Image (cartoon, rainbow, N blue to C red; front, side):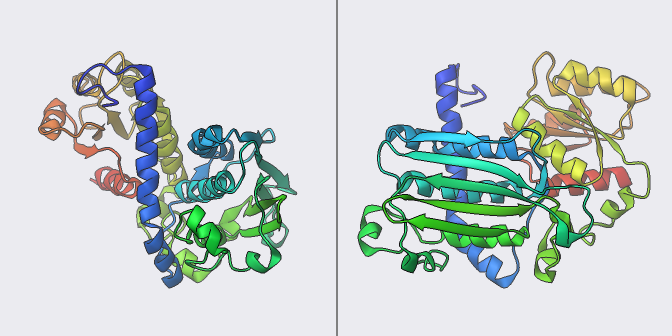
Length: 364
C-alpha cells in the first residue's frame, strides 16, 4: 500500500500505514519477548551492534508512544544535549528497551500527567582506553505516574511478575517487559536503576557505556554477539589489514540509508551514497566502487534502468551489483538479473545475510 501498488495513497494514509507497519513490527517483537528471555538465560541471544545515533533513537521511540500519550493528554518532554556520541549498540534492542519504559510510563501515568525522556553524559570520554575509567551515557524515563512501593520494586525485574493484582486487572501485560529491559541493558555492559514514590512517580535510569566495545567482556556475550566477535567471518578481520572495499549504496529511504550504511561501516566498509538512479550511474562512473547495492524503487531513474546504464560502461561491467527491492513481486528477480544485477535480495533485508552476500561476491 505504501508503494501505491493498489492505487494512489495520500500523505495522511501513508502516515497511518507507517504507524500500522511500526506497530505490527513491534507486536512481533513483543511476541518474541518470551523466547528472548529464554535465549538470554541460556546465553544464546545475538546482538546486532552498530554505531547508533542516540538522538534519532530517542526521537523514534518517543514517536511510537506519542499517540497513546495524546489520548491521555500526557505532556511529553525530551531533553537531549548537543553533540551526543554514537554508541555501539543493537539499535532494535535498545529501542525495544526505550519503548517498553515509555509505554509503561504512559500506561501508569494518569491523564494530564507528564513524561520526560532525558539524556546526559557522565564523564564520557571516547578517547579513554582504561575501561575502569570509561564514562556512561545516562538515559532516564521520568513520569508523574502512580509510583511503586519499595516492597514491590524488587519484584519488577522477575519474569511474569506484576506487582499488584488489582493493577493486573486494569493493565494487561506479560510481566516480561522489565525483565528484558534489565537483561538487554546488562548485555550491553550497562545497568538499570529505579527510584519511585507512591503517588508521585517513577524514574527508570539506563546507564550505557560510552565505549561499549570495552565492556563486552562476558564470555557469554562475546560468544553470541554477531557484531563484535572476530570469529563470525574471517573477512571482517581482513578488512582492517587492507584497503577497505568501497561500496556504492543507491537508496532514497532515510531509514534504510541509516540502517544499512551504519552497519556496513561498522563492518569496515567505506560507503558512497546515491539517492537516485542517475546519481548512482554518475558516482559509479566517477569512483568505480568494488560493489553496488542498488535499490529498485528510486526517484529520477529507477534501479533497473540505472543497472542497465552502468553495464554499458566497459569499466563497470564486472562490478558486482546487488539489487534490493521492497516489492518482492513474482518475476522481480528475473527482471533484476536480466538488467545486469549479480544478485537479488528482497526487503526487509537481514543485515547478516547482506553482509554474507557482499563478502561472497567480493571474494569471487
